Length: 250
Image 1 (tube, rainbow, N blue to C red):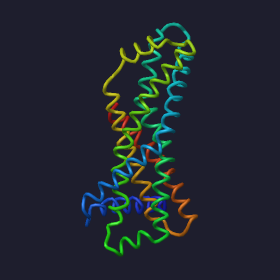
Image 2 (cartoon, helix red, strand yellow):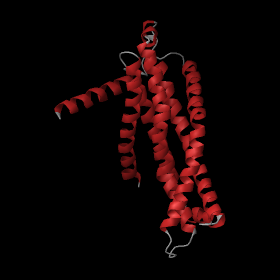
Image 3 (spheres, helix red, strand yellow):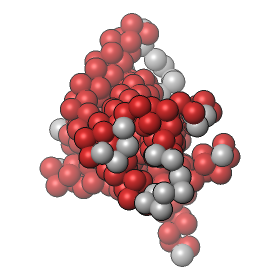
Image 4 (cartoon, rainbow, N blue to C red):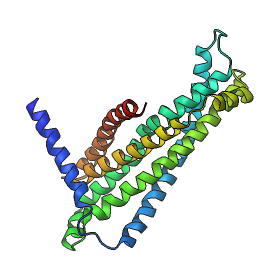
């Protein structure tokens, strides 16, 4: 138990030291701005297809399962739309999607930085006087803070749309009733919670993955191990953060 606590405190301290080092001896802001745009573009474009497919089917499946649970006839069909909307905004789009993006974006960040570490490219940057943390990590974190809310917004829209289409095709709920349920029981604060989760999860995935990649040691096998650790530790941290956000805001 003591060894586990020591291991946790060691990595936690080194993690925050890495984040603090990003803001020391920074170069011209225009350099980070360009890197930020590149990272944001890669995250959004590289994940857009999977977000579209998964979000559409998440909404469709949630609609059908909700309709299956409400077979008693005690509730109007419009309730299906409200349940799908609340579930999408509070959990499906920000949380479930972030677990998927941890595998897509987190593993890429860890493997990219890890490869630069084992091939001594990071050492070369440091020898030239470049702040490697700021140059490699900061643009990825800033890019994630923009990319994740954008992807979550797309996910929420397509999840609602997929639920409406699935309900209308199967005859479980008409598009009119579905839309009526979404509008009648809509709570604007749920959107706030969704974006708080999106920003928080983007920060967690990008920073944890960058940490795993930045301190990779060894060769190709260790790069793969760092990529796996990035996904695993990101997901574990997301679970805790998801609970804390729900406890605080809801």
